[in-house]
Image 1 (cartoon, rainbow, N blue to C red):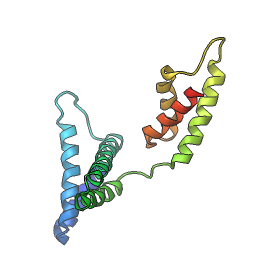
Image 2: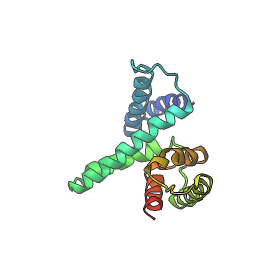
Image 3: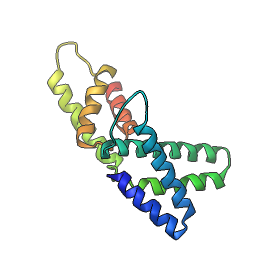
Image 4: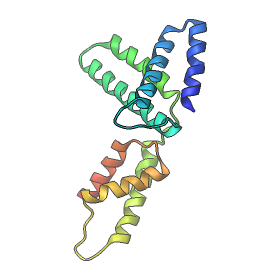
Length: 156
C-alpha cells in the first residue's frame, strides 16, 4: 500500500533532514488519516482510495499553480510545483491525452453502433456510461480530457 511507503519515506526524510519532502509527506499522511476517520463514510484504505486522494491533491496543486501564476506569485507557484512533483512520485503513470482521446473515440463509435435507433442521437445522457467504459481501461485518465472528447463528439 502507498501509505506504508509514505511511512517509510517520512522516517527517511526525518533522518536526512529533508524538511520540504517531510512536510509534503505529512500532508499526504494527514489526508489518508482524514479519509479513514471520515464520519460519513467508514472506509478502509486501499491503493485505489489512496490514489484517488493523491490525484485530488495533485489537482489542487495544479489549480493553485495556475492561480499563483495569474497573481504573479512565482515563488508560491514554484513551491506548489515542487509539492506536485513529490505527490506525483506516488501516483501511477497517467496515459497520454492522445491515448485517451483515441480510445474514447473508439468507445464512442462502438457505443453509437450498439445504441443506434431511429431518432436516437448521442447526448449528455450518454456521458456517464461512456466515461465508465473509458475508466475501465484507463482508471487514471484525466476526466476533463474524456469529457472534452465526448462533448466534441456530441456537438458533431
